[in-house]
Amino acid sequence: MDTSSLQRRDIASRAPVDAADPYEHLHVEDFAAPFADGRVGWREMVTVAGRTILSLDGPWRFVLDLHDEGLRQRWYAHDDTPVIAWAIPRDYDDGAWQTAPVPSCWNMQQPEWMYFEGSAWYTRVFDRPHGPPGERVFLRVGAANYEARVFLNGDFVGAHRGGSTPFFIELTGRLKDGANRLQIQVDNRRRPDQVPMNHTDWFNYGGLYREVGLVCVPAVFIRDFGVALAPGSGGARIAVDVTLSEACDIDAHVEIEGLAAHRLRIVGGFGRIEFEAAPELWSPRRPRLYEVRLKAGDDEVRDRVGFRDIRVAGEQILLNGEDIFLRGICVHEDDHAAGKTTSEADIRRRFEDARALGANFIRLAHYPHHERVAEIADEVGLLLWQEIPVYWAIDFANPDTFADADNQLREMIRRDRNRASVIIWGIGNENADTDARFAFMRGLAAAAREADATRLVSAACLINRERFRIEDRLAAVLDVIGLNEYFGWYEPLEGLAALFANSAPGKPVVISETGADALAGHRGPAGELFTEEHQAAVLTAQLDAVAATPYVRGIAPWILYDFRTERRQTHLQRGWNRKGLIAADKRTRKLAFATVAARYTALSAGHDGDASVLEPPLHPAKGVAT
Ligand code: GCB
Image (cartoon, rainbow, N blue to C red; front, top):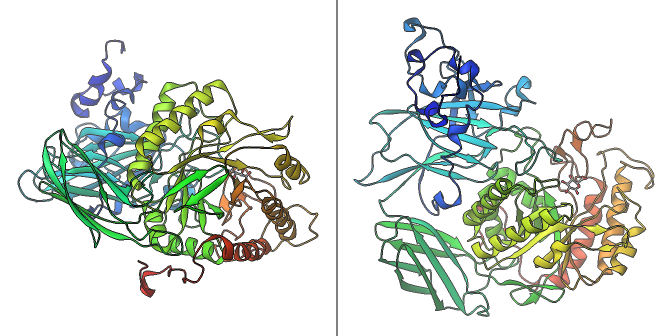
């Protein structure tokens, strides 16, 4: 059959299968092309602060689609005629025989789905929400790894790429009275031009692994808003900016509990105001949050916001004007039973363990974590580094890869920019120092600052191993130099002192990773790799070296919990990275946990200010910190 005359855009819109040539799909290979055009990104996001989300979580009909038949055969265009009435056979009936829960990672649902990488289809029916006239309805997907294509009542309505940030697709005007059929095709294939690319040191979970729901808003609604201390105001002024869905001119009203109430003029859909206010500042010891209400036209949003100042001065990091040392720990969003799907309890346990370690700082590796993480960190007083997965050998020369990374960065910032706990945006991890990478990263640093002028920008930089010093062109565009170094594990420990002595970064350095694998329970001499003793000895030496190096203003050992990764296949690893201070059961603490905890506890007295104040509780049951 001659398929050359097929127009790309036609493929998505042609008539239901029964009417089409039944063999046509066998010969079309650009079947995914029509769906690239409808991509949504950061501009289409809708703030959900204080809004009710109508949950679509629960069991969805589900099938794996190894050969992409769903797009080829246009499964989304099928009507719901029962098999008994079919005129010609089909290969799909909404997965009526099988379900998967949303949110979840399909890998964790059935043993035979564990290593599946490819497309899968989720289908469910929901009733159209009934709100006031003019109400608009958006689908919100918390995260889908990696690419998602969405179909409503047989029509393609939008797509998204990037596996760790939320996306929104407007359904207004497309909803029928009564039942509506929603289908989401999720594709988790690893590809060299994606962000991350195909090679990473974590497990590639697939699916709708964060919550899915509907958000209903008025015809003109608040799309985005920011509330923060005005940069450079010394904590004496607050700035509020508002972006509406439409380019209209109206008044908005902002109220900050006990502090201020102001009218703010919106022109062409955008408004900004700065006013005097002297809030009690947010810090890890006193994570004070204020209720914020913002009204514009018929819309209203609410949030709980902390006010704090973070900046660098020379080689110091200043929190509210005071030098701070980041006693950190890295953490992946990974669970031996739930994969990448997380829960309130899991997040609070993570924070409890970090607190028991004496940490005041967490690096969320290597992608944006669930939005509840930063919300809870705001409440309990933990500082966060949050990043996008610009990891290792990204296709830096590819403009489309840049567009993907830039969008993920802006989506992460839009989602979390009102979270005081987030102090650092991470834009990359261990990328080779090429011209293409430098241009790419310069672009990302500029994007981060344009989207948010109130935080620090960092990345895990490189070491020049010939001159043995911290040397990376990228350092010039960062506020804080992140450094992943594994002296004592991948290379001899002796190099560390030389590296620190040879380097003169002129900016604060944070050791964004260091550590050693240890299988829990594997004991032996400190000289033997993979023993708990060896891991503890490496981290002791690292903490000693850091303590003797004034420009190192923080350290985040790799990592809180062991995590799943197929790259690691010795008999001591068996598919797990064993650098956790705690085993994958999230209970068994290795020797190194106590080693780091002892150091951090000693350090904390001098570094967190106001040590007389008790740390806020981690569980709301015991009282939410204000
Ligand atoms: C790194 C990577 C991290 C790995 C870690 C390791 O430098 O950034 O993703 O998991 O090393 O264990 O080797």
